[in-house]
Length: 63
Image (cartoon, rainbow, N blue to C red; front, side):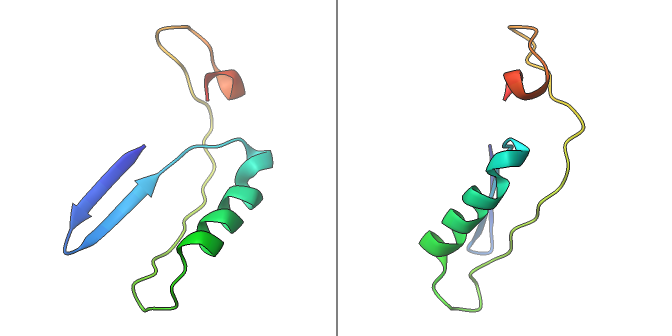
């Protein structure tokens, strides 16, 4: 997870399994939406692969 700060803004970057995207996105929107102009945006993009250096796992097992 990466948290960005500056100008009273913050960001959270998370990586999840494809099957969890819709549920997590809906939860973030329903729990954080205030209706104000600064509610933010959610960007969804594909991650080709992930490797866990310590355990040598890759793919969904490494998430």
